[in-house]
Amino acid sequence: MSFANVIFAAVCWLCALVFGAIALWAFKRKDPMHFWSGSTVRLEEIADIPSYNRANGIMWAIYTACMVVTGILSLFSIKTGVVLLVIICVPGIVVLIVAYNRIYNKYRSTSVIYKTNDSTSKTPKAVIIAIISISAIILIVVGALFYYGEKDPDVGILDDRIQIKAMYGLDIGFSEIAEISLIDNSVRDIGIGTRTNGYGGIGGALKGNFKSDTLGAILLFVQSKSSPTIKIERIDKKDVYISFRNSENTEQLYRELLANIPLT
Image (cartoon, rainbow, N blue to C red; front, side, top):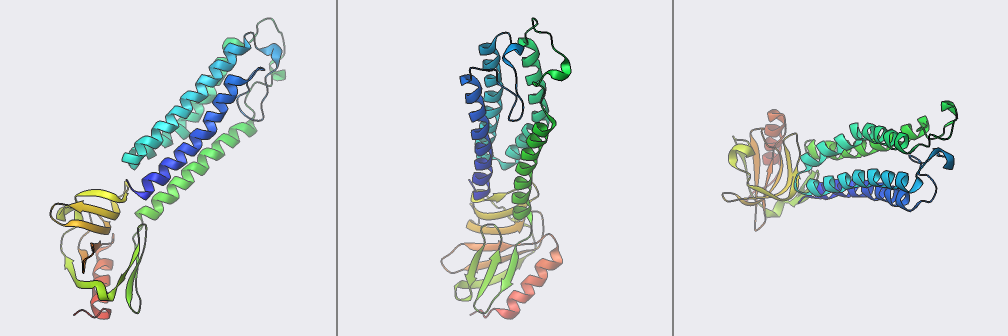
């Protein structure tokens, strides 16, 4: 389970907390539940207020459950979580609006005659915009997380250490480096094993802690399908593997490492 998985799940559960509060509010209300903030429903519009509110509560509870399940599944597969969250936030909002309108029409009082334009039960444009904005914010946060996770690591050579700026980044002191080599294969061909605490997104980037039967415990900052791969062997620490999308950049970094790092 990686840090990215936990953050993604936390975002889903935070959203679930908000929608769960709306569901609870709907169940406990005595007057008719509106769709969300900014809309109102008059008492005389609804024939059976308890049933109407309960139906709204169930609708929001189901939406909350979808968010909770998405968070749980994203702990094991962030790819699955992303797909589900996009479905929930984009077509899911439309489904919510349609479901609410059906609930309202089902429990609307037929004994009250009023002009359609006078009804305040319809979802105002401001509310729809607010819902879409929240969904957009969630998607932006997720997008930023994936951008940071998928981008190549920023590797710098300082006076006494290699500095890797990336998700799960670290500093590698020159004194702890035993050997630096260039492997012709990609890490996918080498065999990365299983992720123990790292990032593995949908674009092929791998960052963090992995373990395999052949390589043991390792740290990856690679594009899984790109070759060659730089291997930095460390004394009594996990070996580090680095590769970029562009193979020329990987080879250039390898030459810079050999030219600037004194190896015994």
